[in-house]
Image (cartoon, helix red, strand yellow):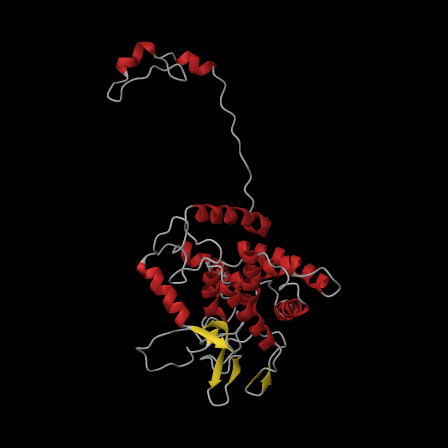
Length: 350
């Protein structure tokens, strides 16, 4: 029996000699070669966030159909995903335990959840400042709440941190920029007066005693995640959120003495709030900077105040992506030393 190319179907243990006489190679030569379809793949910065969201929506739909997330508000006995799906089955005990721990870490302000503390450990007697709500530490918790259909917690957090941005910020009698976001905040409950007091930290309590450069970026990224998850554009379009984004962008897009499009930050004000000798351009800050610019570009209004920032973002993104691909990973000081090596000492025989 002939196959698709005129080859006889041979058993898996047959040798080439067994099929020798019936192999008609001339028929293979007469068949035109198959046409190759080569599609150019665009780089990440060329693709819009809307294009990237198509695959995410497809995955979400598939996950919903297979019962990975609960319908509606996705609430369950443990307030966790997958407990009350149409094909109801209990989640892994570790997942339920994680959600219970996450809910125990919730911080409330006047009865409303506004975030989660950085660490929840009864075994440790030394709390340090881990009983506060850190902006960077809350982001993964916020994403979990969004996926679980609980966006109100995230909305409360975004509004409270935005409110703190407007506070007068001083570290060692030095006034910080207007757009600086807090590194963390805590809520003090007074059971006698029955009042809640919000206290923000802009770096004075950090180990490095420097203002965080990443908090503003995380805030913009989380605002975009909230908008994409809920489909609610009203929060991002409020004058307060628009102003908050512009203040953050005014800090990181300001023109100074730096000759690179990357963001220069001091030691201790990046993701790890202690001095570790990484003064300059840490890679995680550049990644956050890039993503925050992309998110802000999709949320800023093209009005009289926002149009200027949109133009500056587009120019900066183009320069930043080119610089990161072409120059960021090169050690120019070492390359210069190699270039200046004396070739005679290398080529002259001993």
